[in-house]
Length: 301
Image 1 (cartoon, rainbow, N blue to C red):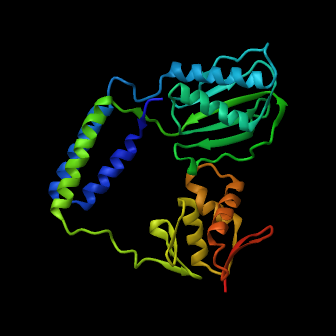
Image 2: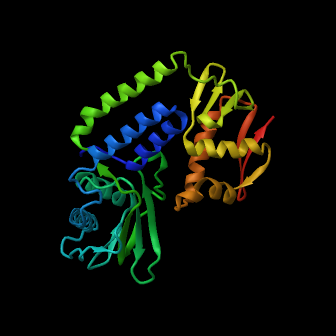
Image 3: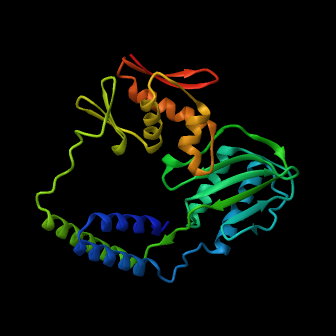
């Protein structure tokens, strides 16, 4: 699979450089943005090939039928509902295993060099209700894949896949010039401020038991031990730290941490709470407890 990169990440990174830099560094950042644009926007289409996507979806449909022990019926023509949403349907009812669906879609998309950012929905034909859905992102930490292992009973289903973030291929010439550009930027940065040092982490933390919690740096520090937190773990812990020894409802936690992603899965909260517990378990003065049917509470003695 050829390497792909999101143009939004490049632009965002360069924007941060331009904000924090001198006028001279702004010129360098602008030059980098121009070079990235020139070498990434080659003859390869920014949007995915419609034909390539449909071929991959038909491959997915064929494999799902075989997994459902159906080697006779056919996959109906793939329909493009919008520029980034496609529908896959079947001639007859079938059984869908969520684990098999996730792995099959991922494998076929990888083989066809298709986006790693998409939402998959399994819809019941008659009621058009979502029987199962999940979201995949390039960063698996942010992916939401609920209810693994729970098989959907045999019925008529359609599968809709929406690509959430278009990506582009990187020109081979980019690999020649990118290292040279980065070296030049590093040279001017250190030349401009040779005494620059990494900012001290002495400030901007909250004390939780024997831990120091640095929300802006996504980390916990206990004596000489430093524990890295994921973005979601950090967001959850920040909420608990602001309201210690107080019961916080599940609905509030879910809304505040997952609301912006558009897809909310209840079991994701339990998963991240469990991860936080493991990282905090070495300190007996603090405890992340479950208040059955209500929510969670960070107990600090």
